[in-house]
Amino acid sequence: MTDRVVNFSPGPAVLPLEVLTQARDDLLALPGIGISPLEISHRSSWFDGVLAETEANLRRLLSLPDNYRVLFMQGGARLQFSLIPLNLLRGRTQPADYLVTGTWSQMAVPEARKEGQVRVVYDGQGAQFSRLPRPDEYFVGSDAAYAYYTSNETIQGVQFLSEPVAGDVPLICDASSDFLCRPLPMEKYALVYACAQKNLGPAGVTIVILRDDLLGRCADGLHTVLSYKQCAKEKSLLNTPPVFAVYIVLLVTRWLLDRVGGLAAMEALNRQKANLLYTLIDQSQGFYQGHAEPGSRSLMNVTFRLPDEATQTAFLAGARERGLAELKGHRSVGGIRASIYNAMPLEGVWALADYLREFQVYSRR
Image: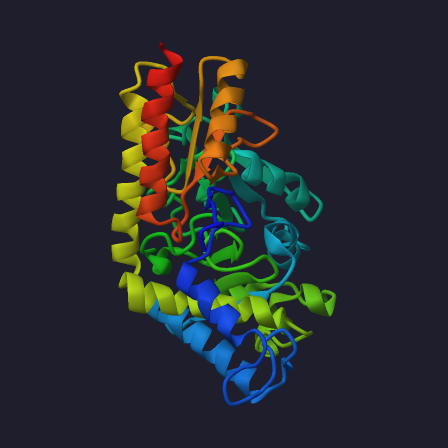
C-alpha cells in the first residue's frame, strides 16, 4: 500500500480503502460461489441479493419514502441530460425551467431543447459561475413541467446547500458529484440522479431515484432502453447491468452505514475537510485565490488559483513529488481543484493542507 498516492481526482474518484480491499479479496471468486463478480450472471441469485441490499441501503441512508423507485441505469449523467426531457418533456406544451450554475447544468440545456421548450431561469455565466443565485434572482413558473438544477458543479466548485425554490413544480436534481455527502430531504424532490464515479463506485452505473407520480407522467412509446417506465417495470434488469459496478456501490453503502455511521456523520466529516482547506485559502492573504464565493463553496471540490501560471506549475510539480495527485483544474477553467469526496480520508486533506502552508512560505522567500 505504500505506493498509493493521495488521489484528488474529480472522477473516477477515490474509493474507501476497505471497499477496495473487499473487492480485491472477492475478485477471483465470491465466497461460497466460486465465480468472480466480474464473471457472474446478472440473472444469478447472488446479484438479485446485491440489487435488493443496495436499494435497501440507499433507502435507509436517505430515509426514502415508499413512493419512490430506485433504478440502476447506465450512460452516466450525460444520458440523463437527454432521458429527463425525453421522458418528461416530449409531446408536452409545458416548458421546463433550468437553473444554470456551472458547466454541467449548462450542458443539460441544449439536450432538453431537442425535446421541448426550455426556460433558463438563472444563468450564472456572467459571474463566471462563482456563486449560486439568490432566491430573488430566479423564478420557477407554476406552468413548468419540471425544474432542473445541478446540486454541485465539480468544475467551478459551487454547491447548493439547500434546495432551490420550485413551489409545486417537480424538482429534478443532478446530484452526481455530491450524492450521499449529506442527508437529503427527499420528499422535496421528484427525481434525483447520480453517476457513481464520484461518491458511489466506479464508472458504469447511474442511480436514478424518482417519485411514483413523476413516473406516471413519463411519455409512452419511447425506445425501450430510454424509458424510465420500462426500466422500473423490469426492476433495472431491462438489459445486462454493470454487475461489478453495482456490487461496488453495495460495498460503499455498507461502508457509509457501518463505518461512517450514516449521512449526518458523513456531512460532519466533509465539512471538517472542506473547512480546513478554505480556512487556509482565506488566510493566505491572496496567495491562494478561491474561485467560488464563500456562500456558494462546495464541500466536494475546492477550486482556487495561485498568483501566476509559473507558480501554479511549480505547485503541481511539488504536489506530485509528495504523492498528492490529480490536483490540476479542469482544462476549461484551469487553476487547482482538490476533490475531497466522501472517501477522501481526513489524513489526505491534512497532507494537502501541510503542503499548502509550506509552499506559500517557500514561494515568498
